[in-house]
Length: 453
Image 1 (cartoon, rainbow, N blue to C red):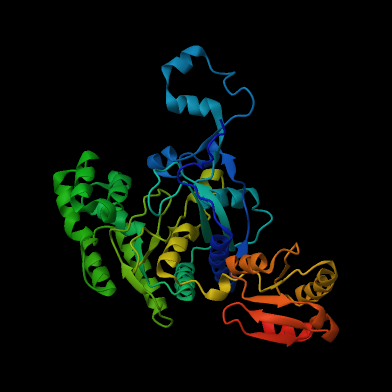
Image 2: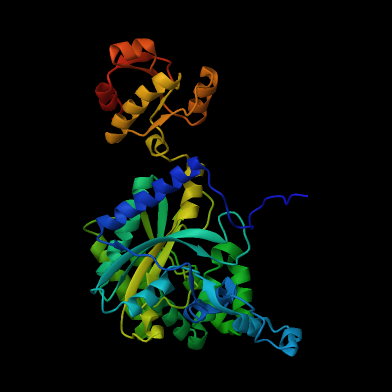
């Protein structure tokens, strides 16, 4: 009995029409990356587990797809070790490699390995798939593409300003209304200090980051479970729920964090960003949001997240400053800042809002109907000339019935059909039919090329 074909949960096939949409997304984002001076690199789908482990926090490590060693991967494992069923220990013995979880850690590894070949500051972008052993749900996949832009080797906050402008430009081109949320990990560290729980900063940020998903009560429960005192939880409430304009929020934070140098530095960094956006304001709404924590442990400064306003879906872009990332690979003192566009979520948003430009989805522009061997050879010459002019052209491969050929053109949404019979051959012209209106006209191949351009 034949096996019923299927794909793993959390992965997807994409049809030609869907790929046209995805390429529109990738091309648009790439154009904006180039506009801001970023250059493209690629890294392998697999990395050594030693590269990946310990970079994403405990929750992130659990979501790494690990790859079994080649050959007899059980050769070094005893029966006792197998029967003990210690999953983590067995994984470390059976797996040396893993699928990349994001593009940022592999990028840090790339920078360290190629430090003598690249100039600093180094502005790179990368558009590749990543994998996470997550529970699939709407807007959350196990395999998905990220589109990252990072700058390393510069401490300047001007990089943060330009990345906000870059995000704003991308979503303006897509026509998606978004809110850009901004915070700073130094502010969160300062808050942990003033409530008396500085060593719990990771637990606090991981819990706060879930506010939108699980609500305030559940966040407070998680804080208590992590051993944070009732007094500290109470002190967190007005900070988490801080309201007012961006400037008002920062003014309040200056008072709250007066005894924390780290917290005040975070406030100062956000003030710098706001000041430099005044002369070239964003089209999107920019909001300082203290509940934005981004659970990844490597962020050290400004953090950012983008939410679509007209579709219920998670974050569609995120990122931040990560001063210490290359240090774990033996290259300390290199500051970095970057953002990542979630291409799969953007794909879903554009689908729901029907925002794809019609010309971005067109593939073949014209198809020649096949009437037989004699006509086919003439059509081949015409197609050759049209393709040389950059016109996307097809010839139906067989002299099938007209209804079948027209049905094929219709199913592929080909806007024009070319007919070359005895009369057209004698006149040295082509009859062109508009598949939407049914209108027909006779044109030379040069006229047709100009018409389709």
